[in-house]
Image 1: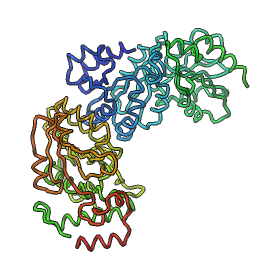
Image 2 (image 1 turned 180 degrees about the vertical axis):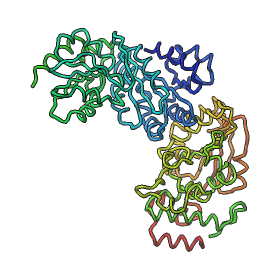
Image 3 (image 1 turned 90 degrees about the horizontal axis):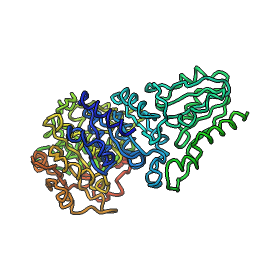
Image 4 (image 1 turned 90 degrees about the vertical axis):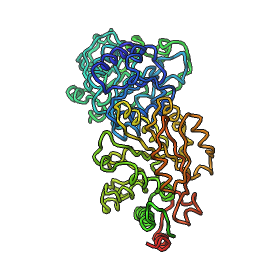
Length: 294
Length: 266
């Protein structure tokens, strides 16, 4: 998705003089053309994430649209207070595009993991959260929302789902309709489900925007449903609360998510996926068991 | 206790000092000694340096004042009240549930406040962003940001020193309220040498001397400028000057207020 991020930012730079790119010395090579063409609006600030966020807030206050990019933990965890106060509290717009969420940088270890990003950002009022499933979706979602009046967190992933779905910012997509349960897939994890899901009598809803959360789509479907399975490749919790607000009746919610642990292994993302159950086979098994529960 | 500043008649200063204490007494809130150490700086900024009309109008090419050490905001409130940014009865609500005026300033509630501060080390890098934006737009705006010596414990202060000199933000003027409040913990000494090593233009002044403050604020340079203003925490009220740490966030009771009033000969 990073390649498309570069392309879309370059494209926007040509027509929108308000956008400013700020890198924290990550992803610099990809933007080399932009740095030479727009040295005043494309800045490799350096490895000072907290000040970069506050600096970006100063730009935003002056009418610009800062777009900050680095590895997820370095802004979400390290500069959380700057996101909260300088953007959230002061209601300033800006975009925060990260890579490496959850455990994409598996071999680099826990310092570079960030499965907590969505939960943390969700706690900041005024922030929007976007989890695109692939590059095509990212391009659509970024174009639709980069210049709205909010602060927006975009989570880019190493894994992409192979289905090119037309997505709309703030809206979820119904992939299939069924009767026995609702399955919610967020971003790239759709890839693991799409191959087998037709065999099951379930509704599958695909979310790429988590905040604002599309409740309307659930309200349309909710009649008769009492079971909801959420598949999200980060720490659970964010989506559950939104769903509980929609379903007033008794419901069973199950999460297939990243456990709240430090993932101390190295290796590849695929190996972590396998260990944590993010494979088609293991997810399908969990769906079967879930459908059996009452 | 009378003051003999040339640019601000003593009675007026004492009135402002009393107003700070009165508000803190009404609300049972406020960092009074911090407000008193920056009062002269803030008064000079609003009266002699920035154009208040342009600030009220939110003119894009205005000069900016950002109070990075947000807990000193009582000084900013009383000076802004004097400059008719808001009414006396509005400011009397300080610290109350529905008030616009909190213990730290909020730009969402008061539009003429440039940034919501409180957690230290945020306003300085934000000010650098504003200064960078002004340069991009070819505005001649100058961005004044007030930080504390205690705030200099924060890493973002030194990150921003790097950032501002790298981008040659000579429209950024950082004022350090050097009231030595950090001396009880991590002492920050030789501030001049530290900023100089980051390639900043450095000036040291008496933070209560208006003529010297005005001169330093008008300094021009091809580098970002730091003005190390030596101040006294609690300046103007002897009980606070003599027990600075005790009074840092202490409530002013009615009897104490009466004594302060008598001392100030209001």
